[in-house]
Length: 98
Image 1 (cartoon, rainbow, N blue to C red):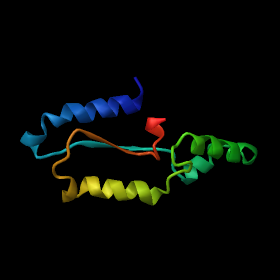
Image 2 (cartoon, rainbow, N blue to C red; image 1 turned 90 degrees about the vertical axis):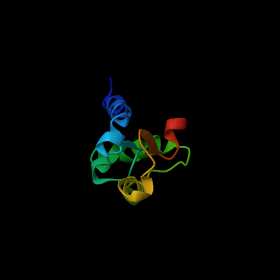
Image 3 (tube, helix red, strand yellow; image 1 turned 180 degrees about the vertical axis):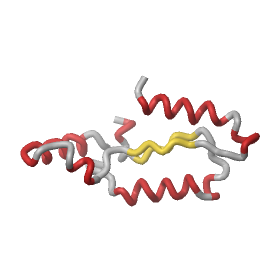
């Protein structure tokens, strides 16, 4: 089982306890994002090819800016998501749909 599947199952399992604990669980599922860590995954010779491959895996044809994922995280952490629990929120440029 991949770590992502485990986290998703944990969110779903915690949903039943949410009303009792006043704790709501949703998963934020980010896609490929421009970060220093991504830059370090490949050598200078292969970095462009890696980034092009990741871009091709998204419907939008680009990588996310970290601020785009952070904006969704802020919504999930705020009262704006008070009626959400057990949700999977994909900020992945559509890559889960490809």
